[in-house]
Image 1 (tube, rainbow, N blue to C red):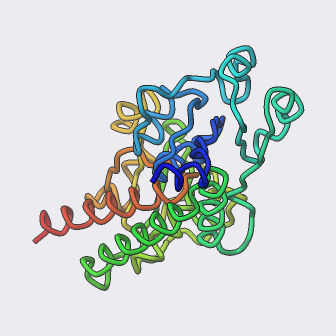
Image 2: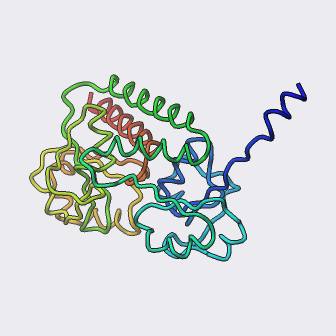
Image 3: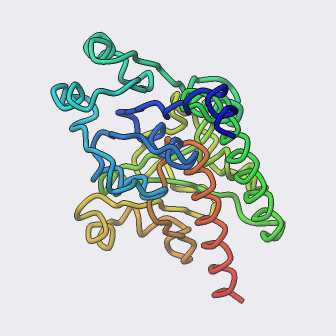
Length: 278
């Protein structure tokens, strides 16, 4: 036994990975290899929520302005970023090798990009098999939820409030639409979207769309109170007819963990709404 261990050599330590990006952070955590440091951990808990970060994860400061001295002290083996933080790469590369992981690459189909990014992160963490487990469990869970939903659901209009008069409405190339499609649900929004899969519109743009309205938290401060007196909002057919579902925070630019969370929350809200109406 001793000889076998000597021949095999010492166990390879897991790489010390750190990231500024919440999507990378949630995916690493779901893979069972949470990063040692993440930028803006408190905001992560507000916007991403789950999977929760271990208490040992260090807050690296602002995503766009991380604490470089702290990063040096933590001595990471690799720093992971998404393309939106590319401008920081020259400074970060003086601390450790930097790898860019792109999940929202602007291709026609988002889901394959999410699977590829999951596999890349698992390889970087030295556990490629973890990606296959996460992919399999995520897809199986969404398929199971689809079986629970009846056919004929009204098309969805999925939004997040930016202020009391403007929302992000999610469509082509968004995580929310990718999940809705896998649940067998239609998206009522047929307007153009950006590379992140949303359009920023005024509430008037939602008028006349026959849909089940889905509002994803968190709401900006004061918005809930303002909507009670907002004529544009109150005039929407979905609001007048009580067809508004509120979901807890789900990271709209997330990876597979957010996809499964959105599927869970959406399916539960639709089932609860049916029970109330029956």
